[in-house]
Image 1 (cartoon, helix red, strand yellow):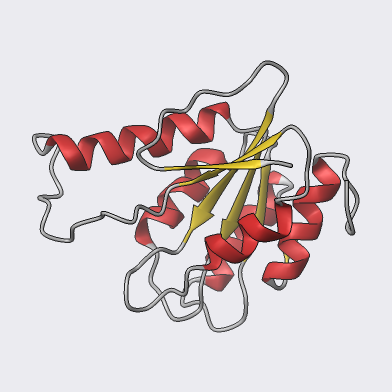
Image 2 (tube, rainbow, N blue to C red):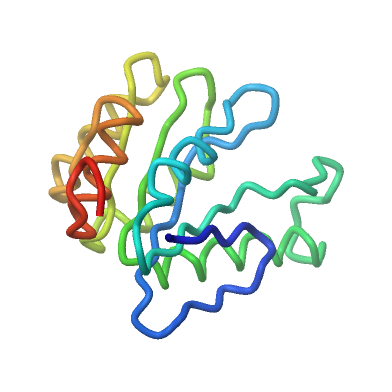
Length: 161
């Protein structure tokens, strides 16, 4: 069985363990907790850690500043997780703006490990599609297809390990 490392847990991977970072919409009150669904769909993968940035103890009152240690630690965790991941699965929820995810798209587009899902209705779907096309990023049309592409990237197939 795979395991989930959720922020702010230490990013300690076991020898030979592969990792998937769940990048995407988190906006509380707008974005569904899609990361839970994705992690559950990948849970049967042996030797795979799912890196989930969605914190249970997130506080919208934290200053969005490098001077705020909890905020900075969260951003640093996410950046480190993306660097350590073998695959970055990125989901743009149509009901969100996802400015941080758009930033992450720019950071990861050229890295060769990104898979994107941008359903109809996302306010910058065209931008996401152009960036993906330019840099050869795989695009899935729904969360199930995103998970299937991640599984394929990990050599696990669509139905199981």
